[in-house]
Image 1 (cartoon, rainbow, N blue to C red):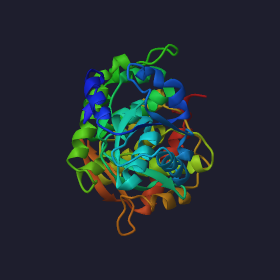
Image 2: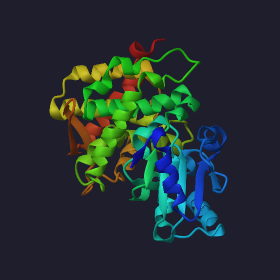
Image 3: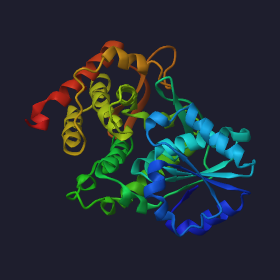
Image 4: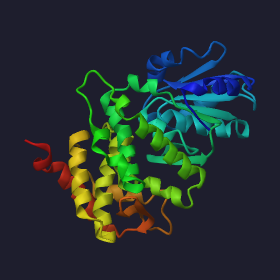
Length: 354
């Protein structure tokens, strides 16, 4: 169930039907986001605060959440409200789904990426042994509450991280998501620019909701949502493990470059789309120095990807805009070539200037 600001009465009814209510927040959402919810009476709820950052999306943090639930006598009719970005909704949904074999949870995403992607669809989980979302389960939230006001708390980099997933929908579903006006940002500060594209946010939410409702456990069409994620996740995992800063959306933005390269190679995608995206990326996203990134380590990380079968590394590629193909087995030598293509692009001064 997707709820918006005008559905606040329905949200209040959902909360009041439970014996106890817990709020899960990280340090950032506690500081910056609770004020947005000042119209909601949270006086009788119990706060659970966890450290922010992907590096804390682990079993130790889950144990802390469970301990807080136990210590405060949460029963099977309790409710956990996850307020934060994808890290919070992922780990909160996982903790709630396992506690006493499952209690209700509601996601209130506070980032653009969380609103259009992470909070919707029932994927919950944690990272394990350096692998992203390696432990988890599918469990649907009681509701997802979308409040655009949270976007006012975000810096430009966080908005752009979410924008990467909107662009992804352009390649796999509808080219209107690639319209130039969506990508027009005013000078910063002030920010954000979200009033320029609320229709794309709602449209993205509708796309993600429709795809995941019709394939709840990712055995079919839902897999197309992983476009750009195979190499993107590997880069994200490697950089985080080596204490380098990268947002999930930035990793997906990087991962779409080799995905488009491979789409040309395997499905004769018009190369102008790859050129278009490389130019779009250079105008909107951060440049990363990938010259020393170990390709063999990236491939080893990819071998643990949950989409693989029989030892083959599988990709989502596109034949054309809006025509994705999932479960494409890509040869290791082609993966290496596509990563080198990305590294060369990030080093190309023709895109980035001197």
